[in-house]
Length: 356
Image 1 (cartoon, rainbow, N blue to C red):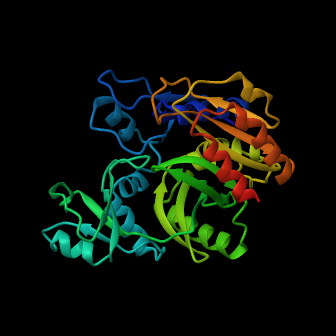
Image 2: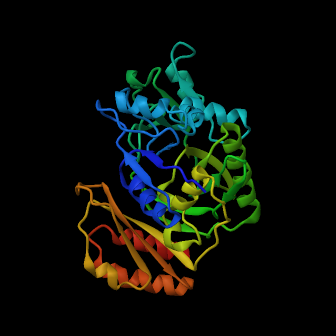
């Protein structure tokens, strides 16, 4: 079988991990920064995917997008703009938080915000990541003129916790999914993920049905993630990510096939298989800190280091911890705790509380 080269628009940690996943599949995976003036060499049979959803107009980015095998153009167009994304979810009858477009050409911004109740979250339509491009608003707060025409607003949802679903679809429409993964964010940044805690079959089936219908609507090929709020035992979809996703990193050691491998299998036309658990696992994001050799002494710990410049709050790596039982995972978390920096123990405390 002649396998294509997979070109990834983006050369950050996701492209790096896709490249690592490609080697056992005999797939050449080439991450390319999608911004530049010097055109890159592409083959006619290359398959182009992304690790980032959006980049400014430039020669290299335009070259990648215009390639005949650039995948998921329709999905990217809809998802990068939160107005279009929310409109798509409404059209497909996927439940989301009540929302409005902040555009004074249609209604006053004050009236639109007030229609959502006492509190709302304002989100820029384009851009924004890890909590950036978002503002919390409550009745009586100042309304910023800059929101007009460039933002949507969502009602503040009293959710108990957040989960995500990661799934993959191939060109034939076959789909596979991971179990729902429970996530904890701090200041808008994902700190940790634990799969398998929300094992309600009805909740899993609803999530798979919604994400499956979204991927079918886009004729999507590859891995997509869907972030959700849990409200009184029911799911409300928050956002979509048309790519491999941070909350799926646990699958590298915690599942029979990782999200990175599934993405490549779908793009290259290789068989999709349903992921199975390998024990009990969690993923812990490492933010703005140095590498520590002591982590390697923690039973079941696997360190993924990105080689990025260390800056406060920046994702510089992650730890996957996989153990055969819940009690063994809790023991490993206790082993890890003395080797964390100030302010990081809160992540271990959260994980232990979820596992108890």
